[in-house]
Length: 441
Ligand code: PFF
Image 1 (cartoon, rainbow, N blue to C red):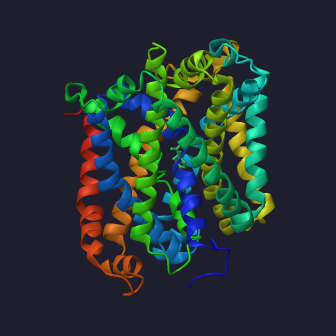
Image 2 (cartoon, protein in one colour):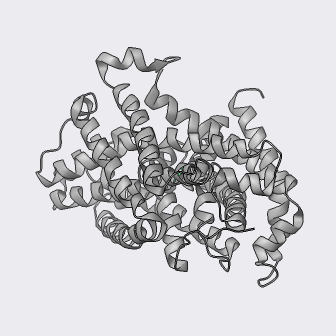
């Protein structure tokens, strides 16, 4: 049983929208710092292993469930596994998406404000800026409004059209920034920092980080890809599409490192970690770089575009559920999801405001840090683990065969590999990594 709902109209549109979801702040700012700090190419190798062996099959699993049912996460699970509790997975995923979008939008608001400050050539001191009250809230609100504007357009006229326009611009900015960085005098040193493998830094913490980063970066495990998968037309080759998306995502993460580290080393500035990198280190670099005014605008716009195409996917998951399971009109669903995300975002933002931090801190961590850590390091792997069990064990093998071969139209060499990974490799390795992260062995 399938229902009549909007689908992406072209193959490219579907791929661009999903790459748009995957490529975000996670690639351009989180990945390079993680890689730089955690052993360079050694981290890259582990990360890539996770993307290829766990993330890509899980992306396929979500695509299969979404495309087979053409429904959002809750109804899809209900349809494939009636009279069971699996639909709760859809709700858990959707709550996770809202938690992610809340801290994500805080950072996206900073990038939006920095893009504007770059235009007037007055970048503020970040330490001081991030603890201001109204301005970060204001820019975050504008960011949510941009999201709502796109999402109100629906799947084809909103998400697909925005991705078709924004992703090529993003690619252009990325290539321009890369070329510029590679022409700088410190290019070799920067590349060495990123690519020199230092296996002595690899420990269980690094492995858990690489797993969290890989899931976060390709948006997998929480139903976001399931929702986009539900908009893929029936003839889409799911295996090939998933592989294309994860490879592009990894390429862009590496290119972000190629932009950032050569620039830092060229001006003798130690690459900082976390938010400091984008908002403290790089502005200092841009100040000294010839044409820095221009590059700074391009860089922050790149971050805004990347964040926007990801956050619409984070809101679309809950929106699909509100439409299908709560029978809301699209417009109402967009308002409810965006407002919920905004309220959580306000709390995250306020948790960084010095006078309120104490009230918005749980277990010694601000809501901002808590939501970040909880989603990337706990909820995404956990829900991904459950997804692999669902498709691997709960659904019949025939389901995977039909979905991956489009009912026998395309070749089936992938089927046994994906089945093995979803049944054994993914659940066991996620569990082991998780337990070792908790320090249990
Ligand atoms: N993949 C996005 C990034 O790398 O920034 C973040 C993200 C989007 C995570 C959508 C999860 C998700 F469902």
